[in-house]
Length: 100
Image (cartoon, rainbow, N blue to C red; front, side, top):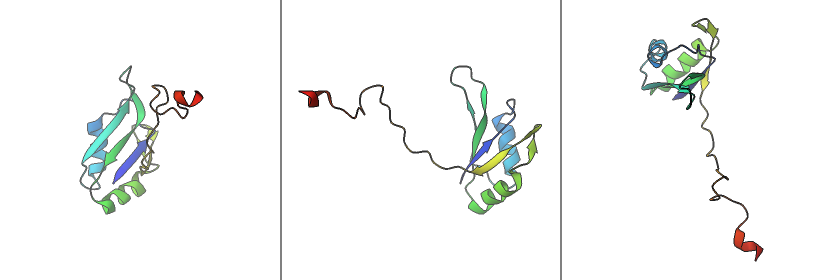
């Protein structure tokens, strides 16, 4: 199960995030999202746990917990629909040849 973790301390490392969730079961991955230009943490991340029961227990017990001086938000990650890119013209709703 993919888990969203928000309101993280900006100094938290991925290894620390993984360690917190490992108390509840096996962790496949722990990723903190960073700004692509500065490389600094955006204050949220994702944890992948293969066992759904362990993941649900971690969500229940960690949501609202204080970690690194901040109250974190933990819930099941909802997959975002595919984003469409209108800038490059590939997904333009109007076709140029339709005006002729």
